Image 1 (cartoon, rainbow, N blue to C red):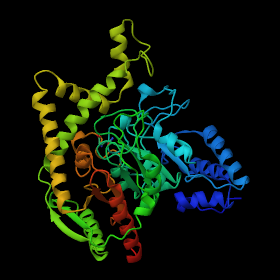
Image 2 (image 1 turned 90 degrees about the horizontal axis):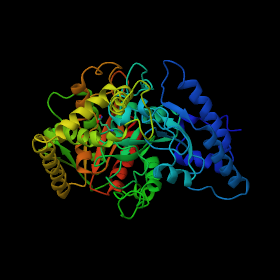
Image 3 (image 1 turned 90 degrees about the vertical axis):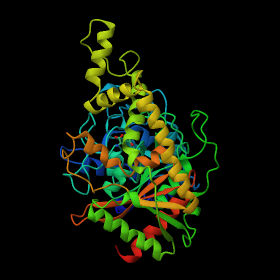
Image 4 (image 1 turned 45 degrees about the vertical axis):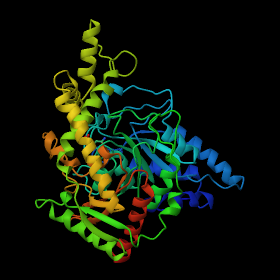
Length: 489
Ligand code: GLN
């Protein structure tokens, strides 16, 4: 039973329906996903999205769901939906590494709220997904457990830092995944792998149990095959959590219903700063043809300006590294995680633990951040960056008086080759140029596939919205998917 279900095309609603209508059982579905993961993900040279399979937990959940169906009761809203989560979200009793050697043996004592909420809604957690170490990176090459490969072309990166999340959805080894986005880490890998990636408004989704990178920028968000799936999952993720004081007490709409509303008359801004003369011609063409489809669907397209865009990368890399240097001070080998066996004194233990436990990129960021926060440099770098951050946010607030959403490319190029940028941190940082602005402003953004390069690599279009208006960007994304499908592109 269930052997004839095509796992590649399963969506959140079709997976639930298949279990509810007894086309398969939840347990069989889980088994089939594990076989597919074994076949496509785990061998050398394969995708390497999964770090750890949570079999026991998955089958226990499946058993409970199958019992509900056997009783003839309706499944919960995400009942039977197999998902996977980035390894920066803690899981009780299950190793959680954040892609770092320093947390190589860390077994958390509690569950991340986002995971707990999805499980309560019936989702089945298949496993923990590879990522850049502490979510620092744009290619997934900074993982202590080896890179993830792009399912669309195994010689290319899947993007980062949620590379495992995007790759698992693209490969059909999970129906949906959770990622985290600090400067683009959900949206950029979604674009590189040809899936949908949503960064909700800052505060929309609880971060309790998310291993911190930069606390004023960190978000949890879903990666899915469609805007509708993202809408369904967001509804269950979103909302106030008493365990996270930064989570917002703002009503959560029924996004699935909201996305069905027409887009005719919506005003869409196209910021000229995101289409520089020297940009990749295939990315430009794909996003421009996407805008044309939105215009045909009745949206009003307007050119706008976000004048402080060019300061976004330096601003982000000062603030994010400053916060990271402070957040990562806790990994000292004393309470949990890796401890160097090669030390004789306490200070040597700290030093060696951090030297042996952290990878090169994480060390670079700790040093940059510590410098930006140190006496004598704080005003020149950190304080200045905070002021520019406000200017960038104000650009968006002004633009959203004229338009309802903003469309840009998600990334400057399609997925690059493994190794292509790994020795050039600046080139790597520039991969985030279109995504860090929304992160700094705290507004929501979604990346959806809008075309392919001539090499068959996916290209992503980013849709940004006002604070807490995820419903609008999901609606535009959903309408766009329909327009693209009917245009046969
Ligand atoms: N690529 C960006 C960085 O390296 C963003 C990472 C993220 O969003 N977690 O910081």
